[in-house]
Image 1: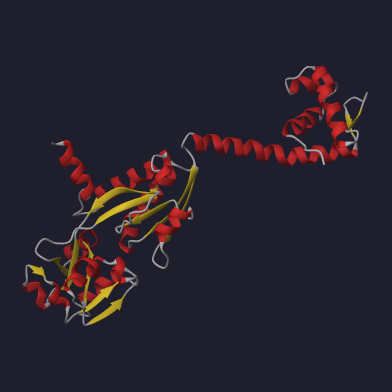
Image 2: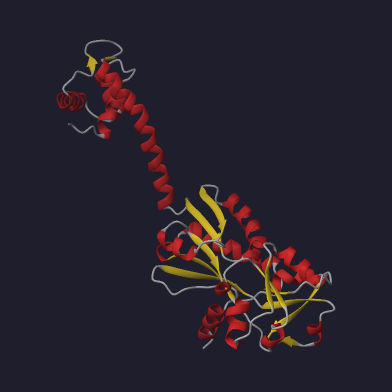
Length: 318
């Protein structure tokens, strides 16, 4: 079987509508003799005549018409792919499938995504919640391109771009007994119903960084999907919950709930955008991280630099 090359398809397409071989040759930037030689070679490869000679305009045989049909199907695809690859090489296009491990983050991420779509219309965007699967392994496999996470894992091939640091706080009803304390101790939660998002406790700071190290279990755990639902349950005295300070701010302002730090020093997680190492400098990814960060600092109360950013600043300041 003989291979049909792209140059053959371009040659056949150039013959369509041409009055002479000279005219067809000019369309593909060849001399008439070079084009004649190429046609003869192609016909010998295929074992059939492609067009009827000495007709004006040139007329195709059945074999020529079939090859022309192939050219009409393939050449536009090649052209489109070439343009796409050029855009990708220039960093103006790509795929950005992301997942969020932070329930509360939808509040600031969606506005950031909407703004990003306007600036980078050629980037294929998709988003999912990483609450019922493990997003970081999916990122390594290439199923995802970015994961918003507060739980980085050391893994070759992953890079973590800092977004911001925040305080994880305990939300209490206004008349709750613990509002009399300046901060919450782990033992204070032993008699409480703890309201959490429906995710594994290994991905929740209230357990991993506060209760588990002290060997304390809450009296009961209840789950709620949405942040407003959690706050409503707390406000009505159904339990306590742990939320980011920036997510609690509006509810504290409205006197729905009261917030207290977890321990005297408080617990300060960091939020990152995890990407594959080879993509960390891709312009369309760097632009999304920068936009997300700007959106957060403009709209969220109580956030600040991550630990890594603070360490880097200390190093630069000597």
